Image (cartoon, rainbow, N blue to C red; front, side, top):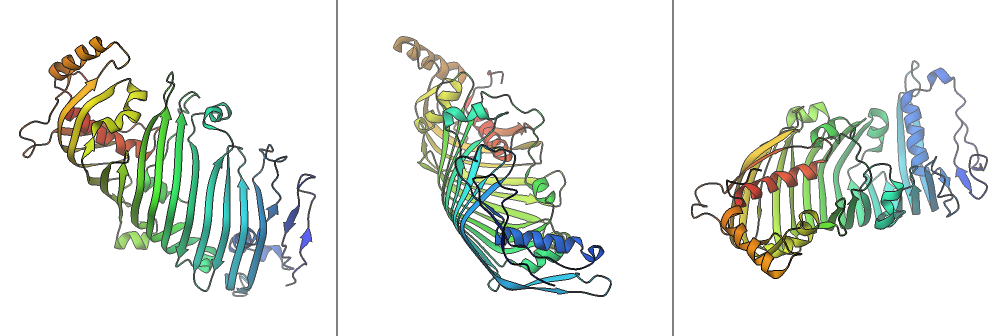
Length: 431
């Protein structure tokens, strides 16, 4: 085996780009080069860096993924071993390490770029570290929808660090199995915005958690994923509205355990646990625990949780832009919920205690009309306070059929909202 010197290869890049590629030539019969070897070379090229300079002039090229890095350093050795029948049966990476600084990736559809301040991989420690991970939209919230073919989430993210430990590179290459002991994601600020002006893609069918994990093109086992010190703000601009509805989750902490699609692992334990908590609307602590059976092809799961005391007026930034209704007054004292289901439907119960609820059904009308609608609402449309027997029976049933074109967070949230609706609205309301 001979290794060629590093060469500059500019013929595949635009005139204003510089391309550098470490090349390995293997003088072996092609029939002996198997898929594992090609997969290994692919991994090495990703780690070592097939680098194309990224500049403002070539961002407009939407036909390729463009990668740029200020500096990449690769150290280590490759060991090839096998029988006479398959010389490259086993590929081992020995004493391998990679460091990269200021990495940028521009995706082909030209809506987002990714940037990472630094990346490092130490095979001896089985550790991958990323710092300063950013997802950057190319267009503002006002302009983004003009460049998207269908409704698309505009995601802007800045994550301080991602660290994976217990990673086995040899296992990834030879068995196409990603085994990681722990992933820690710390210090995230994530802003998700959806504009409903573009047409909706009716063929969109987001996979639910169980199906998403089991459909991965490689084996995966992660013992634990831990997310800390993260803020997520979701906002949606409804068609015909001037302001988006916003739901903020601050100081999110979450732990996902036993994420796997490997048969032997699932035969031992098929339950994936998700435990999370966050301050919703900057006030109330929301806690929830999810259990997913990863062997259930229908996505069976169950969840229980609790929302602490909340001033109802705090939800107006989410309620008014989407419904035209405002909360004038009221206190959510506490709610506890439980529901279970699968990828298509969920049912359960909500126990909620609240007091002095007052809704302004016509907030943009004159005061006298608003006062009249508030009185009518309390009298005929909704319960201003929770029933006296709230300790003994649920205040509302949870029942929701998933919209198959929406992802799991929309599903979870609307299950909970169905219980609130069935608690607050009087029985005469026909929906």
